[in-house]
Image (cartoon, rainbow, N blue to C red; front, side, top):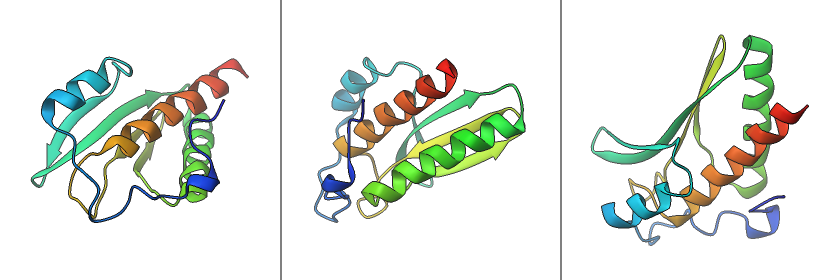
Length: 118
């Protein structure tokens, strides 16, 4: 199941997208409890580390997330290391997190779950 598709190509990357409040983010995190809201360089970001058995599996996941990001035109920060990938979603143009970032985090969870089933 896909939450987002290429047809919705990043209409939430606009400079006028509304940043979520801390209360709104707290409510959204109830749906994806493994994610965290962090501050980096005064910018709120949504992040999670995913663990894998080796580098090859981590790289497959990185590529799947990257392919998804390309289809919607909204790109996360991806840090791939041996046995893990850290995915960080935020909207550069607004310097923070908005609803679309949470939708992308949910899609990232679905990608991870699908890989885990194979």
